Length: 467
Image 1: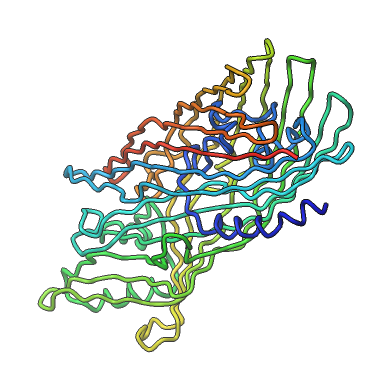
Image 2: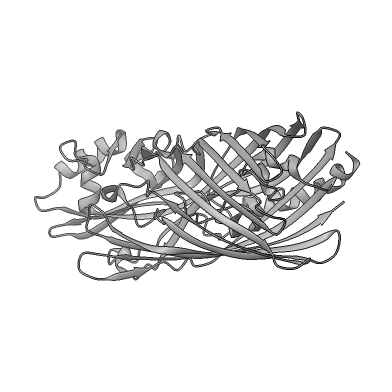
């Protein structure tokens, strides 16, 4: 326990860094793999020792580590390539092309128990479109999202016998979000008109007051745009934040010296609503004879019922000889229960600038209707020399997002990955592991006729020290 206590300051520092790291994930909002050992092998991780990334994969595999204790420090680089093309053929390329994600893990075995601590980024989404692109609607409106979820994880693994390990974790979660989202008048009216609402809905006293105001304006008055903005403009912190908890259980069974089986279940999260002060909702009217009239309301924004889904995973690992390891996993991610809609509540403050809207509320929901996602992963490792291990693999998954509701601010659509990597043994205690992942481009067109393409190149590097 003394060694664990001595590492707590480092863990706290990495927690703070990870807290501020926006992520762009590739299996829905999940990463294609956690830790470079598993990621290089197609993200497989259910049934073999893949380091302390086990705490976010299958925690029971921590019991398979050969050494008494292990420390992992890792850095991931995520490189999304996202483009949104409108029906007229105008392109908008996302300027968010690199995100950095640190991770930390420590585990120690004491008798039949293994315990430790891990800090990992779970996943998220993010992109940014220039204000002068077509996404700015001709009014210089920047469009930007950053969604990140991370965990501090405390695992406990029990060695039942030489063949069976069972495990559980307690997870503390945090979530952060920035949003700058412009809607055309047509999109906004789809939300507020009860006879429409094909892509979402809006209600509340602000909508009622807005409708009353529109009825008093001259015929032909149009809405140029509506604009939601809760973003602190910082690349490392989200304006809206929430906290909560979750847990995992896992099992590893070594059938014989060659074959190992693994199973894990990750619970659905229990997060608080994400809250942002200093948020704003703006709209601009174009009034005949008067021209453009813009109004910005300030107040508090809450993102309601944002949760991370449950996941069920199973896998096998097979060693045909001492140099080869072959693994295959399958996972079901239960997005359908948590991604039916993206819901926000805005409450205008009592500031004089809000006028008659002061104290009023706007409830807005964008339909999502994500489907549960099946992910298949396969990979292999080959020990080329006493020091060098080569790894490779791939993943194939279903797309959880219905085309109609695909939003170019939330393009979590990649279905196929090719992964490679290696490990280098520096000495008896130290190793370095690396992975590179290519997410093949996916193109889809949503209900507004906007074509969205998304590809990704990611890398992870990890230093490990064994005690």
